Image (cartoon, rainbow, N blue to C red; front, top):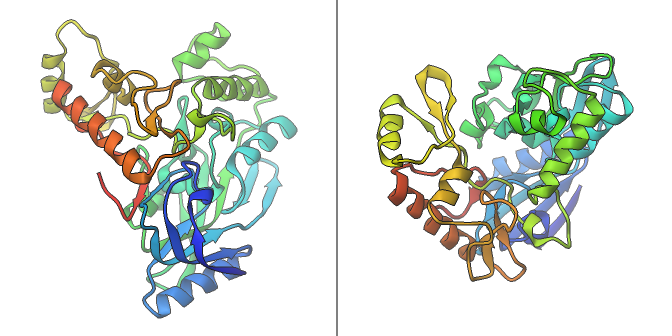
Length: 347
């Protein structure tokens, strides 16, 4: 376990933003993670748990407490059953699963930055695939009960970009993630995303070579600035900054009435709701790629990513986010909700 006082947090996030932590603890085993949590809880110390820092917006004042950086390692594959330590790099794990073992189930989640332990918290998803479709169990430390527990998929209460862990952030610390993959003789799971199907000239629902599917998604993500690159400021982001709105029937009716001749994306969602595209809303509200004249702007490759051009502060980023949220609401009556976790700040 490594402890640093008054530690900079910006270098630990993909946005490169945020003030210092009073105390930073880097834990490399599950036992060290649990010990750090118990130490903080015993004295009532505020605790922030981070992994890859890809889904965090930390305030410029930093964090007045203990930041626990989970740097555990562990990749154990038994047939089609995979167990990942929370600190494992997610993108690297997906690459190994697909290219070295030819297994399917996470191939459309290629190139997503961050740690394995963060994936169930956000129910990470992309290109028609979510980790909830593959996760079988999550091993976590329960800060309320003071013990390590194993939660089944159903007990994780997954929904769109949400989970039990996100609903109760002060209770759970993810230690290990277990996934059930598929051996499809080198083929992917059925393609659910139109952009990927178009890339291959096949119909949605068909399968392609699993390695080719992984590579296609990586190329698509890179084209949108969603694959980390130190030299490309379009990747200095937290990925998608807003979730795709899910509208009740009444909300969708009011939204549709404001569209006029426009045709917004619309996808069926549970309970008779309708999901639309946050990127489409942002673009059609007048916020184009690269929008912004300050040190924080929209990505030049994707309207859903807010980026740090190198000199930004968190205050700069949030000012842009508020402007976009207000503009979308004024144009379409839809309230955008942030996807990243906010620490010490709010919209």
